[in-house]
Every structure is written in structure tokens, then in C-alpha cells.
Length: 242
Image 1 (tube, one colour):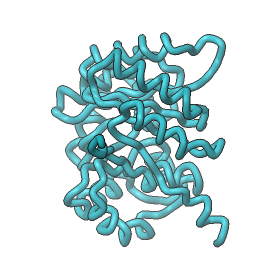
Image 2 (cartoon, rainbow, N blue to C red):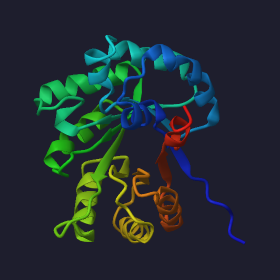
Image 3 (tube, rainbow, N blue to C red):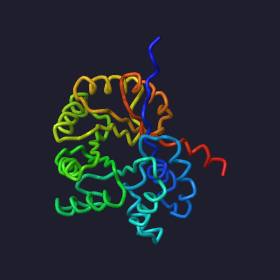
């Protein structure tokens, strides 16, 4: 009998969970009490920052996003913090200069971020290359990302070509970001197996349950060799009973 495989888990409820289901309108005071419990679970990382959290703190919650990050850092003593950045857009909605990107990444690391998950919505490698190299320069974990989709022009070679570029840029790991829940179970098998044959960095999978296939897609991806799952609880079920 083969020995069981240990798969690392990144918990994203503090970022993507509240962003996807609650429009990121959860104030810091409602999050701090759960942090020690999350820290004890043994996650590979906690994605706590980035995405829409920065904007929502300022625009809707009247909070300092940097203070949120520092508070998380003070309470998470065992689990590395991770953030999601939109390449050259960082946590905003326009293209920022390399100087701004470099300084933002430096300050994020100084305030507690250890792992930077970098993506571009259109999979433009030029918009994530600089971020990956800067994260490596400051000595943190750089995770390059494929924004998965399906179309007549997005085939397996599209993803393999992008994965090679991400690895060549120096990324420590590669994430498949299935933000719309389009990755079907057997497509996950095919994609992960091909990526394992193409790159030598650990592969992470983040998929949503839009089509109710999330669990099956994770299972087939893990069977094909995914090392870590980026996961949030199915809190939609809980909300249904509120």
C-alpha cells in the first residue's frame, strides 16, 4: 500500500472568503478573535491580505490596511502570512511603475507578508515578471500564478508556456488560480500532470465552487501531483442559515 501523501493547505477565508461572499466588508474587530485558532490548525499559509482588502479597508471600513496587516502579524505566531497581488496593479486598479511596485513589496514584507501570490487577469507575463523578481530580491517566497480560463485560444500549451516563463523568472512555486470555478476534475488531472512534466517548482491549486465541482477538482489535482491546495471553507452554507 502506498504511503499517504501530505498536502499543504493555504486558508484564504481572511481574504478571499470575505471578499467573494461578503464584499470584504468585515472589520478587523470581527476577525481578531478567530486568528489564534486559525494559527493552531497547521496551515501551510494564511492568505490574509491583498486582492480587494486594501481598497475595502480605506473605502468602506474606515480602517488602515497596514494596521490590519500588523495586527494579523502580532497574532499569527506559527503560520506564514500570504497576500494576493495583481502584478503591476498591486492592490489597485491601474498600472503602477516599477519603483512603486518595489517599494510596496518591501513595505508589505516588513509588515508581515512572507508569501506573495502574483497574477495578471489577462495572463500577461510582462505584468508579473517584475513582481516575482522583486519578491526574490527581498528574500520572500514568490508564487507566480496562472489565471485559468477556457476559450478557443486557451489550450494546454498556453498554460505550459506561461508556467515555463514563471519558473524561469525565479518563482518558488506556481499557482493555478481558477477564480471562476471553471476547472473540471479531469481537466485538472490533465493540466497538473502536464505542469509536473514541464516545471520543477511546487504546484498549488486555488479553485472556487461556482459549479459545485470544487471538491472533485481538488481530488483529481492532488492525485495528479498538486502539492498544496488553496482553500476556503464552504461558508456559503453557513450564510444560508443566518
